[in-house]
Length: 434
Ligand SMILES: Cc1ncc(COP(=O)(O)O)c(C=O)c1O
Ligand SMILES: [Zn+2]
Figure (cartoon, rainbow, N blue to C red):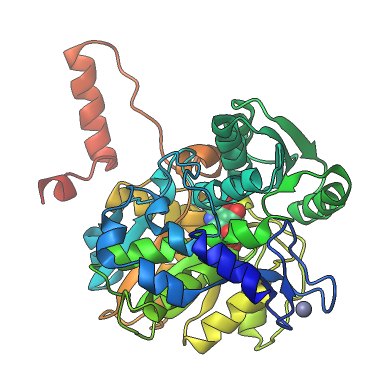
């Protein structure tokens, strides 16, 4: 084994194997995600951090591409030419108006609503997973998705020339379905919820020899989310924030932001700091928030019923790890109602000009709830992760955002409509003038 690892490192590879997160059993770098020899725990990629430290400095990262691949030595791919469709390096925006509204001093939004190519953070995990799928010799890639992952997998597979078959619950939003079909993959719309789709896909993965990005390629795929940690640290001027708030579905994203921060500390790119991790769920699917509230260290699966479909996972694979991180960092996991999700979407749009989907509405609403409960200190530098785009979930806000004023192409018609709007208070002149 040691000789094999030495060979990998001399070939420029900084990842050396897979390891069970529970019992530590070692596995070869194949398409495998559970510890099938011992305990059925999840497998994780192992890195040689001494080697990463030798290769990587702030300067080498800054000289790299303007995408997630500037961090390629922290990612489990061997190719010199990974699939780079411009994924990552999304804006970190200082959100002064939202901060003022909530009573915070230093609030930032990591805006993956404008990630490339499909406007969600899933482009990060899929860019990594499909690069690795290609290295492992897969010609067909697949996924079990709540919507965004299907968009990403289909788009990036099209770019890479890989065959693609994605599985989604049949009741997804029109924008998510159209945003997958356009790339011409095979789309299986399953009568069932995400957890049922996922179970079906585990069976298909065993029989068809496809690369399922979030099943047999999951150890590689999930590492892509670490870039949401690296980018924030770099964009804050090589510093960690005090507090982060992120949405939770399977819990993977949350745990990988944590891992990303820790790795940057480990290799000396940033100074160590106690970062608090808070997670957001929608009440209609909040198994992790419930466990947090009740002080449990296990997750009781639930049947999802919420408009926040992208994060509606009733049996979250990484739920216990997310719980552990929230607890040990002195963070929180909260849930909000669907009405609060809609209010969260509107609040972010009206204060910051960012139109997010339901997952983002959930996160903003939880941010607000935590501030109101005194669980976020106004002095903390807080980063909120906005992970998806509102144009994909228009159904959620339809009927809650007013109507345009329809007028004739005549000045008097405009004047009349304007007067009516002002008396109805539709235009907030005070605010415009300030
Ligand atoms: C927009 C959006 N945000 C957050 C998540 C949560 O991801 P995870 O399963 O890694 O917790 C998802 C998952 O599908 C998503 O689509
Ligand atoms: Zn194990």
